[in-house]
Length: 144
Image (tube, rainbow, N blue to C red; front, side):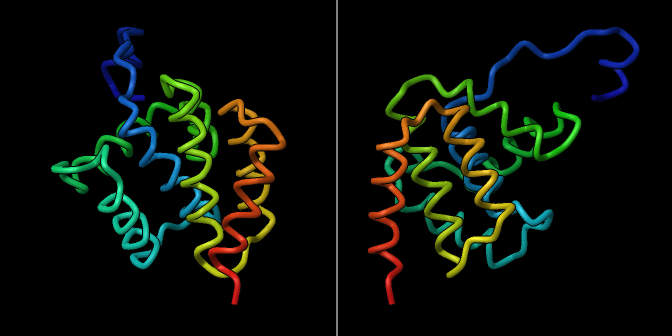
């Protein structure tokens, strides 16, 4: 919360856009351990460049907008609540898929990532069967 917000009680009513929230879902998962390393930022950027909704968008601006949105929450982990503002069920599912993909791309999923993904599943309203299908497909993608 900034100085003006603290002193005036005024807060922004502007909701983050879906593209920023999709990037936010990936950054949350990349930083589930409390740190977002350069390699993880590069992974998120690679995902962004492959998705049609990000065509012709500036990755740095998307990350900046996602960071601004995160600062509206007391902690990064609490900023996961912003994902409930994603506008459509299809984009909620996409956010879940992208977050799970980021988690599994590292080669192993730790308990923090697992718990975060469960929270995302609930907030994004992804049913268990869909979540299991997503995880199964990603297991195939990352099988060795």
